[in-house]
Length: 254
Image (cartoon, rainbow, N blue to C red; front, side):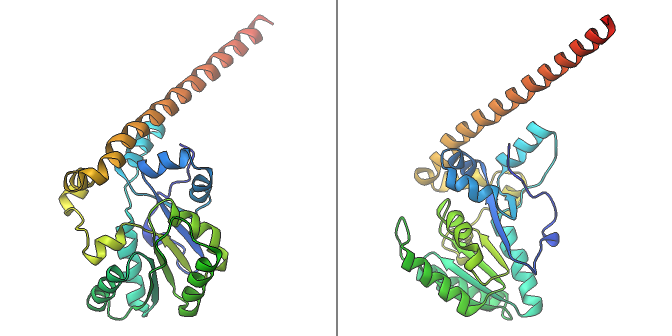
């Protein structure tokens, strides 16, 4: 549906060069349709992961191509394992001091060889130029191999894209809710739910007031976009086929 979705293995990610990694799901797709800056940030990602069963289903429905969901949590775990091998450095930018403290404590147990830096930026709708300069300075002083950004979409994607060239990090990853999952502030659904593509349902049941719009309302909106795109696709194929038949008839008559 117009986005360069990554369909390979996480092992093939360009780990040793500057790479901007974002994720897309049905919610972010819908938001991006009404936010040109956000859409541009996603389109110009170096890697755009299919983080949602809706995107996976859309690929099969529109292109007949089977792809697999790659969640931000999968990316996070994969990169931490790579960093652990080399004693690499990662920086967590976003969320609260409490959440970041819990992340550091868990990392000390799970990946003790990984060096960790953190910063909780001001909680505001839009960062000032001074805010951004301060964040960039803190990241660059630490010089992480991987920068994890958790400010929620679309804020994190816009900020990462705008400041990509000023950040001294090999990989820049917008992973939002992963900060809450890894810190234990929010429990991620079990592997069985994830395997059957029902992670969204568990989150909806646990947090109906916060999640109903994301999954129910925007799920319906995404469905509309999906069928609209399919209709246009079929219409184009029909017109193309009709024109080819007309050309053949014209050639035969001549």
